[in-house]
Structures are given as C-alpha cells and as structure tokens.
Length: 213
Image (cartoon, rainbow, N blue to C red; front, side, top):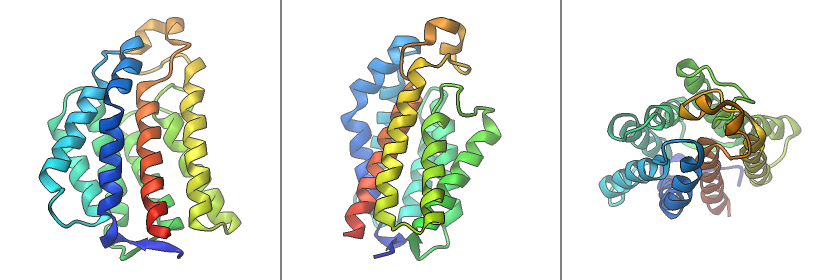
C-alpha cells in the first residue's frame, strides 16, 4: 500500500497520546535537569484532554491533529503548548483536503508544521530545541521521496533520524528557553522538546506503519 486513508487516522493519534502518557515522568525528569521540570506534566495534560474529549468520536488523521493542536495551543501551560499547537495545526492544515496520505504528503505536512514553528520561534538546527529532531525527520522523508523508497522504509528512516536528532542535542548549548540562561552548563543534557518530539514522531510512524500493513 502506498499510503493510508486520512479517515482511518484516529488510531495514529491515539498511539501518539499513549506514547506521551507513558513517558510523562521521563519527560519531566529530562526537563527538570535544565528547565522547569513541567514538560511531561503539561504535555500529558494536553494529550489526555484530547483523548478524553475525542476518543469516542470519529475523526480523521488531519482532524485529530488539528483538534490536538488547538488544545495544546490554548489549554496547557508552559512555552511548549503554543509551539506544539502551531506545529500540529499547520501540519493538519497542509493535509486537510487529502483523502489518501502518501509519503510525499506526509513530508509536505510535517514540513508545513516545521515552517509554522519557525515563524514564531527563530530556532534552527543546532540550537538545542525540538527543531533538531523535527527538521532531520522531514529531510529524511523528502530524501526517501527523491529516492523512490516506499512509505514503510521512509518511516523507519524517519524514526532513526528523529532519534539521532534527539541525541545530538545532548552536547549542544541551549539557545532558547529557561535553559539558555545556563550557557555552557546546559551541555550534557538532552533537550526535553527534542525528546518529546522524538516520542511523538516515533509513535506517529509506528501508527502509520500498522495502517500500511
């Protein structure tokens, strides 16, 4: 199968919810090393609010992303709510009219989410943010399109790129957020946003892989 039905994407969103819920404590621990320590709590709050409201309803992949983004943008604390809210809503908007979501579509959608983020936060690769996870993941998807790889192979590569991007933040100096005040002392710790982005992208990929069979 070259893609999956947009209307069948509910399970992908619920897989993303479970991944955040399962990693609530871990995200809090990572964030607590150089940040406020509330990243896991805030993310879990937003994703759980989404699940509580929509788990018994019918929605497509893009509708779910948009609803999740709206909740994160407006109903959770911390700086990451508006950031993830923007990413998800812009990702959803880029694919809202699609019946089938294929590899190139997902690349375009996540690229739109990244572009939306960079309109509100001037972060780039190397600044120790979730951009270090999301940007290489998008790049790999486009590379797979260029090489004519199938969707499943591209998703496996995307997961690996997300992990590599996440891990790259450990030796970076933070340029944004509370941790940026620490300067050199922010080195040696993973960025919490990069970690949560890796968790989300991995769950999204695994959920889509199940759809591809």
